[in-house]
Length: 334
Image 1 (spheres, one colour):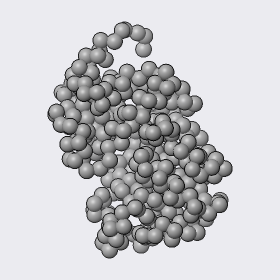
Image 2 (cartoon, helix red, strand yellow):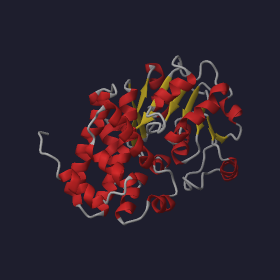
Image 3 (cartoon, helix red, strand yellow):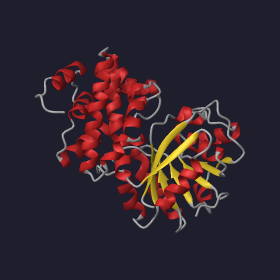
Image 4 (cartoon, helix red, strand yellow):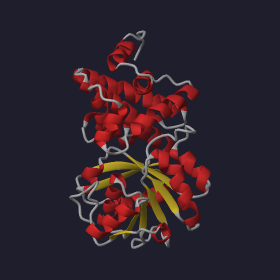
């Protein structure tokens, strides 16, 4: 069982990693935070705040920045990795030789690995082996709001129920509630596909198509997400929960979403590069669109909305033409 005063390590000092580190600390854990940017870590340590991502939230005394990865992981049983999907394998490879045999790994990474089409738990299994307790954390959360301590709920899915329960207890508090699940595939698919659909929602709103179009995109997007997840072995009910519908609605409808803002920028005629420069953070949905298409094609899963978003991003399709293509599809039962 979890030892209450045992430290937890958070790997990744971006907005989400910092917000989760703050939440663990608020709930009473000693937390060590490590990131790959040594200069940024030095600034955070000196200032006692992550000025780049969460400038209004000072670090409590039980949250410590650790510049050395080995020292960060020394004596730690539970480790949370919060890096973008394209950096997960590299991070796991870096962490692997430093792990204690009893160490348990959780990640807050969303998205398929682009080069292989694998979900995060598959990547982790390849790098770390399948005999280690692993979990994924996902749900309708913005780092800024978690950092500010606003009421939030999310899902922790794990291969080991005790690990999921321990993490939920370690994160939960007066303003934070973690639910548990055994469906890692469903939680991971939800986290990957919702980012693609959020770009589509941003494009739709940016073109002025209105609320009717937005809700149709969200609802039919949920169908596509569920279809792909079930084909990969997920539980259909997972997509009606926080990591499915909850995360999808949040990401599609609020401008704190980087993916939604990418869509809004594309609707204004800006390039992906111009939009990325404005947003100043990784927009996961751009690469996810390519990965989702590859996986859907491999599994022969029909995902027309995601297909059109891919064509806008990678084939130069005009957004209005994508809408015409979707509306012109053959009629069928819902």
